[in-house]
Image 1: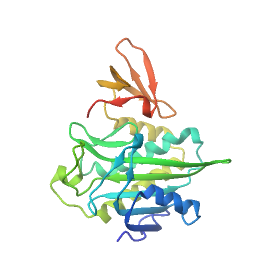
Image 2 (image 1 turned 180 degrees about the horizontal axis):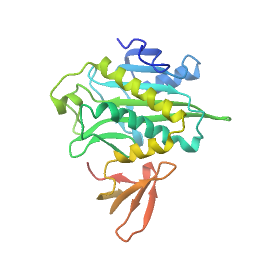
Image 3 (image 1 turned 135 degrees about the vertical axis):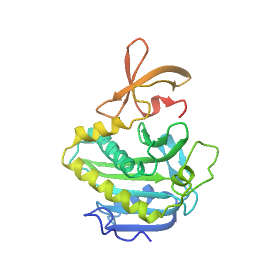
Length: 254
């Protein structure tokens, strides 16, 4: 299962499958530190027992039902200040594949895949290794709910729960890796404008008024874009604009 991929140039030519692990990002980090992984290596796990999400949240999955993997990339052709471009590219690539199954799928800033009004299908967690020379490695962790039906109280969904069908995990994995490689090549070719426009085209709540939580305060705002460094740009009713980092604002619901 999860053999070396034949339909890619460099991504997935080194695949490490683990029946169980704490976190594919942690495992990939250990491999990079010990020089046992290179750009294009993929760590995939059948059951991730301590998966990580944004804001320190956990990412819990049912064993053998979903896809949890980490790509090892070396985006040293980008400045570290451009790291959100990688985030957008990964989101776009996943969406391109998964929207064939779920047409209503959108990306919720910064990197959750959601079906509006239903729940979260998946997410991305990118952890960077930065050295004196700049951006050395990016560990791109991906979690996608595929065949899981039952979830804990949090709002979540899967391809299977939405369509009523079961899916071959390895087949979906191959499709995702191939599309991620194409996206990464486009990023290397400086197709930044195209990547950004595609991300915004599928951005959840773009140009829609909604309530947001800022600490203990709830405000009405409208997402009007993403700044060059990846911050959410919100417009208020009085026309003022404000930019927010990851821990500075929360969506009230889906």
